[in-house]
Image 1 (spheres, rainbow, N blue to C red):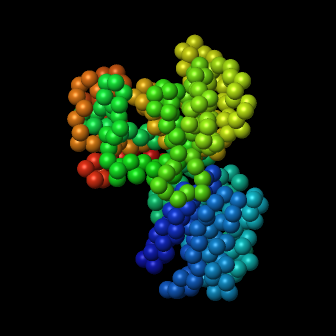
Image 2: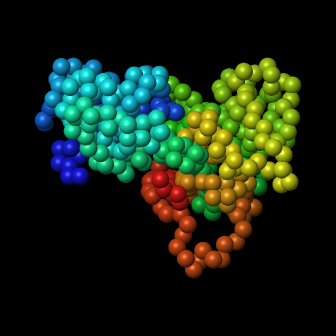
Image 3: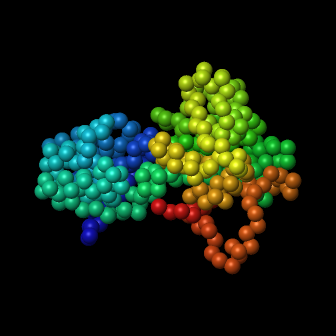
Length: 365
């Protein structure tokens, strides 16, 4: 389809609007909408929170009577079904818009082309595919959950220049500077859940919550704990935030006292290890779209080795910790990689204070 320069400008505005909901829309997708009469924008909106009005509703309310005969630019196909809110396609029809441009179709089986079909049947000019790649990148977690039945998984690592995450005795405060640590808070806020191992809980007792950033939801903390060693005194138990424990064994009696702690028991197996691909499917069924792993080298490396990771975010400090420090990765030697292209590709490099933020991807949706 052929789109004008103005069409692209309005869709980019809609994508920018959608991004404003990146901390709050889960499990719903991030969606933005712009309504324009010629060269005049008459209404804008974005989806803020699941269960609340969608982007199109906000934009239509702002446009009022000026929506009649206008073009609506939406980053995702308008919904066509009744859920917690009425169908947006119906709202656009009733408002009298003349044309709808969607960046991409919605892969959700409840929609999947039905919204665009409803609009077309009402006589509205319907187009889609404008800035589709950008729209997909905006909703990697939602799309991964729907299309692959697993979350989009990111591993976050903070390491020294010589790829160490801690001294030999485990001390790691602070490898990176304030700017990098603040950036991690943004990644946490974007994530549906933060995954760690019981080893990290026992050594560091982290909270794994979002600080410094205003957000209306906190990510769920997920602890891989094969033999259920999580202590009742842990911050992730005591602070009242949602914590899920993945284990292979029985649940201790104290868990019953905490409504914020939920236990998932996987079947015991020969390896006595939690099956990550199976867990990813479970998390997708629980509406986890974006999962960030903040753990030690053992868990992070196991996920990478099992091809269970889509993105690595490496914060690298100019500090040098020395050869006895704890390595960022624990992976077997891979001589074959020298003779072929790298499995990972660099997406971006950014300077944060004295540190570097290196983003790499392997599986791109």
